[in-house]
Image 1 (cartoon, rainbow, N blue to C red):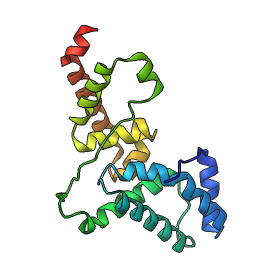
Image 2 (cartoon, one colour):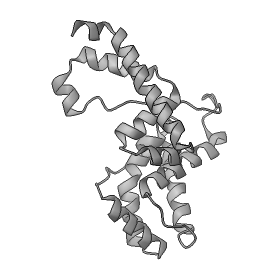
Image 3 (cartoon, rainbow, N blue to C red):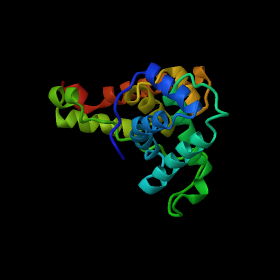
Image 4 (spheres, rainbow, N blue to C red):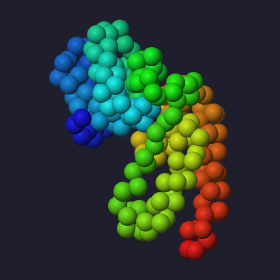
Length: 193
């Protein structure tokens, strides 16, 4: 998948409008811009790159085919994330047979601990402990933290993507942060700082 290039929300909304009017160039730009973030999000639900790529392709294919019927999105990114999430869950019967299917599938998280700030300011031991804490959070909390801090989505957009009400998002985000603080305070690494 290609690395996405940053575009503003306003530019994305204009591309969306142009797509709705049948502009195939805008459609291509939307694909190039959002394919990589969608892939990074989708692969966290099921570790099957081909399946996730197929779901992304289906989302964009359906978007093009329904371009005359779709409404103007408030946020292109959250619209596409929600569409991918729904597509992945809709296609669950096609998931690999060895992966257990439940009503709340795992949300695989590898928070990007390779960012420059963490590498420069924290030791490897602290990074490992932080990753361990994140991995021990419940699935939905991991997903909310990913959407909020990795994808930079607002609580309203997270609610839209995860099909939750805003208060539930607020509560889960708050619980996630409290859990992280509690685990961190118990950490031997924290006590040695």
